[in-house]
Amino acid sequence: MPRTTGTSARARASVAVRALLALGALLGLGAVSTSAAWTDPAVYGATASAASVDLRVSATGGATSTYVAADTATAAVTLTGVTGLTPGTSVQRTLHLWNAGTGPLALTWATTNPTSLVAASCVTVGYSTLPAAPLAGDPAGAAASRTTAVVTLTMPATAPAAVCANKTATLTVGVVGTAS
Image (cartoon, rainbow, N blue to C red):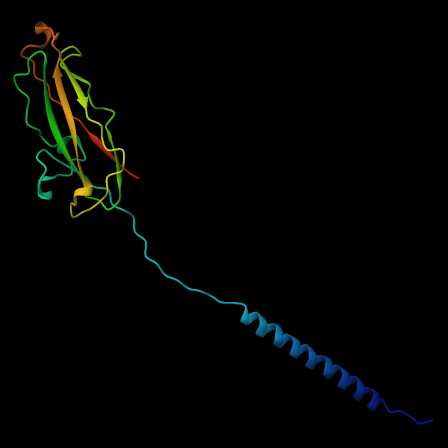
């Protein structure tokens, strides 16, 4: 019987191990190349900014320079005064509103607005309906960013002279613009 040497068995085992390693490397390379073929990274960049809110009011309308930011009662716009109101008469005052911000504003009358002056029986205060759709924002003052609101002061025909005659009252009203 021929005698086998340990080197030929080791050589066969070494060849088998090398063949398995080569096959594993080949399969691993195929997996990596398949993985790379199925990936596609995407990178993007964007800027973000918040809208500005800037509701302005004017007693006369017209050019944007006549509008002021009336954010507090101390910065309120002064409307033409009402004098000589007699029983059974009404007077209206128009507020010109402009959304000088960049985002749309939903307009509502302030909940603190009075419904009467001097006494409930003397002068009632009414408010027009504000636009249902939000007022577009436009710092340049385009027509779509402007609207009007009307305040009506009425002295009922039954106003008692003893309570209402020769009285003076100050009316401060507010319109609230809420970003929408």
